[in-house]
Length: 129
Image (cartoon, rainbow, N blue to C red; front, side, top):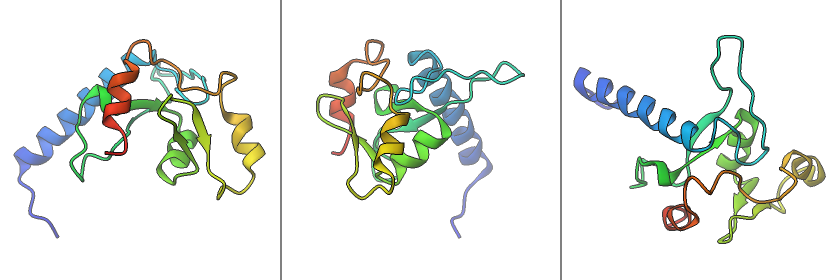
């Protein structure tokens, strides 16, 4: 088991909160794959700040390495059922069961939404390196 100090855990929690706030603001609290913007009864957005390239294997913990996704879209993204092309089109894996169901969840443009706030260059340079 890793030996973490209290300071490491605290700074990670602060960093995670800051990453979430910055990414959700950049994407207007909207899922960039589905286009849904759901706000719960407490006023909190039901969307998650997701790293395009994981932080653990040297992915940067910065907004240009983040997108806002709903819980289901995040699950699909992490498992490789959906991904992004170099042009930010949303791709559906051939390995996905129920490809039509997955496609029905994707916004009508078929492209990642909200990239006007986070430039396409930043996202492209952050993913899959």
